[in-house]
Image 1 (tube, helix red, strand yellow):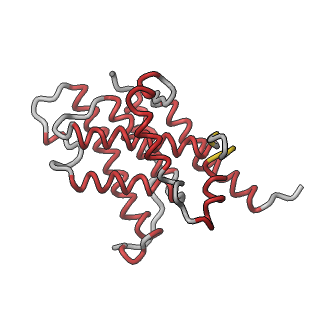
Image 2 (cartoon, one colour):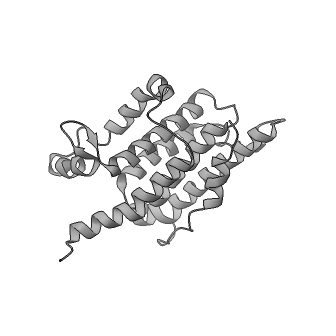
Image 3 (cartoon, helix red, strand yellow):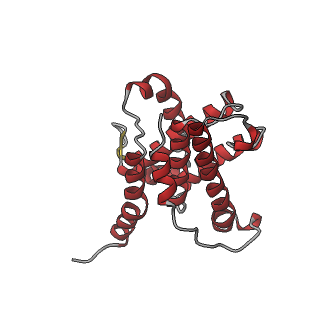
Length: 215
């Protein structure tokens, strides 16, 4: 049986983006189905996610809807739509920390969200949706003082707070590097300072360290 170009594309998307992000999500023990999410984060996450497809160019609207949804009319997300939704949730959590608790160190949950967001940018680097959400975080970080999640900005951190803050900072540094070496050369070459280069291998060690943090 002949494999179509669309079939090969869908298989690559599943293997290269969706599967590793679902594995990371499960490993980090994050959830968008529990009571805490429904009570505190559902509205903001849905609003953030919906901005990706509301008012899109009519010429590409159907393509966007087909990518994010199994059934657009019923708002049933596709597997790709699910991992983008997870990315939106991680963004909401990070923005909340930056905007409402900028002088507080990261806790375990924030560190896990930072690591999940980095995973999204890494594995989804050829998908515009992940970068669209990342640029919102980058804008917020640019406005934030002092620098995001720097352990140097906090005195007398407990061991657990120091570890969580350091991991969140490392996740941000990895995203920042990916922005300069992949996003700009790939998507905005007129702004790039260097040629496109493939990113370093995703750090499973960082992911497992974040997953092991104590709440």
